[in-house]
Length: 284
Image (cartoon, rainbow, N blue to C red; front, side, top):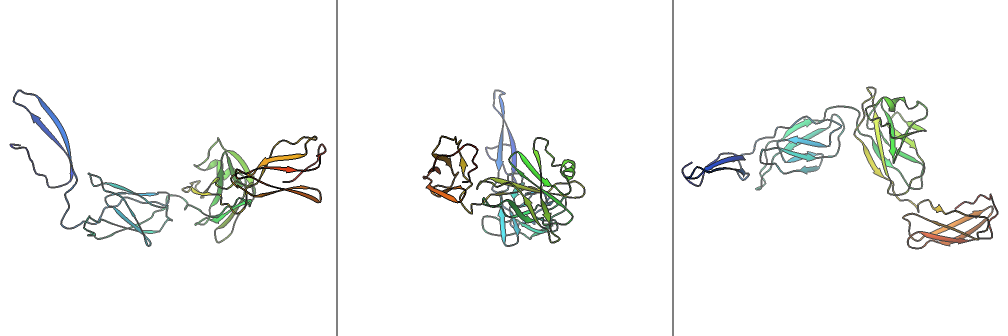
C-alpha cells in the first residue's frame, strides 16, 4: 500500500507487511470487528443433539421457548452459546442481532437424537432416602453417582452400567431399589445425604449410550443427620456435631427416655445423660 491506511470490506484478521528503506521488515496482525452489514443474514447453525449443551456456528441469539441465550460473535464470525440440554425433537430458533437492535431472519433447528434424553431430577432431600425424577424418555434405565459410589438397579443387576459408555471402574457399585413407571417417573433408593451434596443421574438406552448428566444439590428440608463422637462406658456426656445446621435441638434416646441439648451456631452439641453402660445402643 502507498499510504498509512488501507480499506477492507469485511471483518477479519489481516496481516500487514511493512518494510523500511534500509530493508528491515515486520509483519503485524490487525483485527477488524466493527463492520456491520446493512441487512443481517440468517445464521448458519451446526447440528444440535440431545447430549449437547451449546450451539456453535454463526450467530448470537438462541431462543428456546420464551428464553433467549446470547453470546458474542468473534472476529471470524463464529460463536458458541451455552444452553440447557434439550430433549430430542425440540425446536430451537437462532437469529442475529446488532447493536441497533436489528434482527435477521430466523433459522430453525431441531435437536437430533444422539443417545437418551437427559433425565430430570425433581426431588432429593437431606431427610429422605431417595432420588425422584422423570426419565424424559422411554425404554431407558437410570443410575446415580454420589461421591465415589454409583447406584444401579438391584432387580436387573449392574450389567447395563458396566456395558454403557459411561462406565467408570473407579466407582464402587451399589445395588439398590430402582423403580421406573410407564410415564417415566423414577425413584432411586440412596443412603441419607447431607444438604448441598451433589447428586448426578444418567440414563442408558438399549444401545448402551449414556445421556448428558443431570446434576442437583441435595435440598435442606430439615437439620442434617448428626454425627456422634466416640462414647465410652465412663461418659456422662454425648458429644457430636450437626453439619451445616446451626442452632437446633439434638435429642438422645435411651429406651423410653429422651435427653435434649441445643447445638451452637457451628452445630456442635453436648448432651448430659446418666452414665452409659458398655454396649448400650443409643440414638441421636
